[in-house]
Image (cartoon, rainbow, N blue to C red; front, side):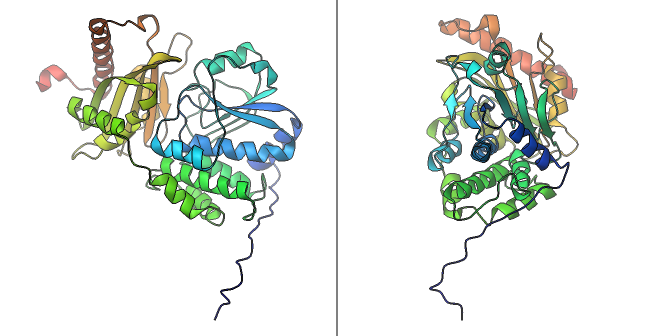
Length: 380
């Protein structure tokens, strides 16, 4: 019989990365920048994959005496994301243009390549802050040159890439160290959410989750994932359902105006529409506005069709801005797009706002219909 009075041994890992592996190159890069201060850049509305990798990178940087700040432009509004940040005590800074970016010696881009980081990327360039690290699992945008770049589109989550770094010695995890338990818990959540509960997980994602399982806090992870949807999210989902247009097994829904606080309801509504019978792809979009945020049309793309590439679809449907940057992109089963309203932004009169929405709603639908070869007139 086992002795129940004895505690389970504290599990530790001690690994050395293979020469010329991504992990060894990342470690060398961090050593080359030892003692500096870096800014970790996330997309405007960061998800668990981005938040968890940023937190992991931040903790790992301590061994190189690198001070870091995790920064994003938008808001954290999804219930699980709020719980993740609060329960794991992850410090994040919302950028509002008031930070002195010249204090940073380098920038780190995680789960993004700058295209969804808005004004922050422009201000970093103006402040001559060089990119040091880029790690992502989306299609390569080739917009940022950095000392270390690791982009793997075949992997389901950036969190899985960071789990590999940890396993190979970027940071030797110790189950008795609370920060390491928090890292493993956060990364596990990132993998689960970005692979849709492992439905779209690849071999590397399963390996990463298996490794992290030895260190994560299962009770804490359960608390994070059990967060209920807010009333606002439910109302927006209902609006998406009511406004949807069906074309060639696509469910397309414009939901009008919504606050920045409710932005994360857009992908949740897209996930919901994808459950409808005979629908393989859902696209939900709306104009997001609020204090401290430039009015922007934001959309979410979800698909179960294996032969449909979200990244290619979004780029071909919506194209590029005047600077040559795509309005959006994606990964294996999901994607997103952001289109600045620009000159037409603002306007308090309801009649003007309604006309503006109808203009953008019509334009988005026309571009999607043209991409899928759908003729609304013939369809009746």
